[in-house]
Image 1 (cartoon, rainbow, N blue to C red):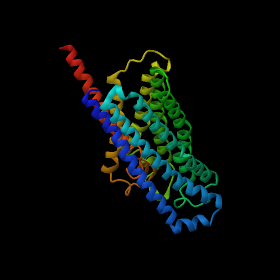
Image 2 (cartoon, rainbow, N blue to C red):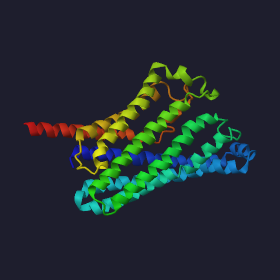
Image 3 (tube, helix red, strand yellow):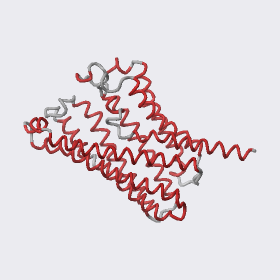
Image 4 (cartoon, rainbow, N blue to C red):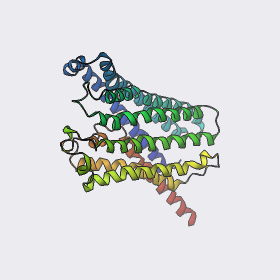
Length: 330
């Protein structure tokens, strides 16, 4: 593998592992904070016992265990990348086993969100009668937590575990490409486009704590509208292009990787996260905009920021492809 592409691969898996480890540590600290917070416990004790169990399982135990599991999976993903780049084809059987472990742990991470899904739906159907972060409007939890996490825990583990079975088994290469393509599409379409678009829907719900930074007045401000457009339309375009590239594998046709197309899509995906990161900081961050959207995209809560590293791999693919083309034409 060319050195510049190898560097791009290492950048992506390093970002993934590094941020997964960071979130695991934050999750443990957060859970300890929940457990030791007497005010939260007193408020929860005033409500039904079933809600106390759901609250702690959804906000504490599930998040912590899941994030730690993902961090361990991130280590195996990093190890698999280094092993393959170091020994290449000679290490392929071992690499497939390590990737299988990483995929299995990633699938379990998404399954660990099930308690959070149940908690969000329970809060909505109870009409917010129980304690939850100073009585967040139930409709926000429905749009931002309940429906998106239900889609996530239904779709992502399904395709991830299927891909794992293909990687670790004796499946032909086209089957691995097929389920790898479907898994990639599921990440971009469900985890990114659908969940972030639902966050924009949640940001339309009136919320006193947002101090007026919600609804149409917030959406139609030029910089906010730009963020909305690149999310709802930009990410949708990226996901549909991923599906277009995946169609030959779904039809069991011969796989011919379009390096330019793949590089452009990776650059666009990573660029999306860089755009929102710059948008978050250049507009002042969460403090002056205490709303759903800023909470979703900011570093304090966004576990998907590792995807910005796709810019490096995407550019590496584009540069290498351009170099190869130039060498061929000379």
